[in-house]
Length: 178
Ligand code: IMP
Image (cartoon, rainbow, N blue to C red; front, side, top):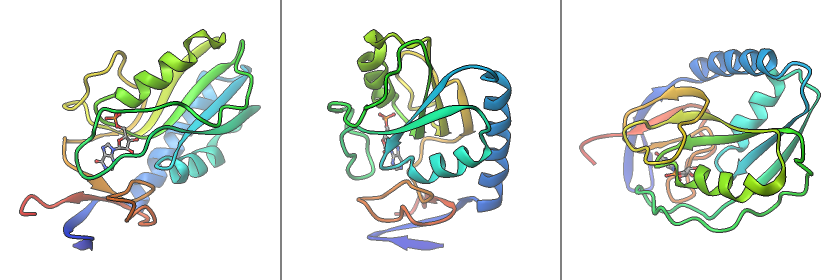
């Protein structure tokens, strides 16, 4: 068990399990997008660790750009997202893969999709390490998912609790008794 700020968490997905899943996601992407022009858009801050490890498994001729939406506070998603900043790559006629740490309600990904819609991409899809299907209220579920998880708060491996815990190398789930 670990403590982050005022909450306790227990290990939920180990570093080994994450590594193995990322290898298999990389293989799927390599097969699916072979010979295609791909741009990865990693959503900061949460996806920095996942994006970095995933890119090492990808052998496509691709670009990667880092974009940012609004920050997320506390243990409940606000559903309020702002503008997309940092997109400095031309995505016209390219296959765009958004890299997310977690898709929860799906609001963030919906917003990013709507902001990219008119930019002429050949295709738009989402690759997320974690997905909470029970919380999802978005348009399209993510196409590439590492782990589908229950609707409970998690930290680590890039994901934060009030900006803490991003540096943990595994994923930890909040304890019920908190
Ligand atoms: P959505 O817009 O509800 O899908 O949430 C997207 C963002 O909320 C993610 O990119 C995370 O930054 C944050 N988030 C959602 N659930 C969690 C969680 O369990 N732990 C940490 N951050 C989360």
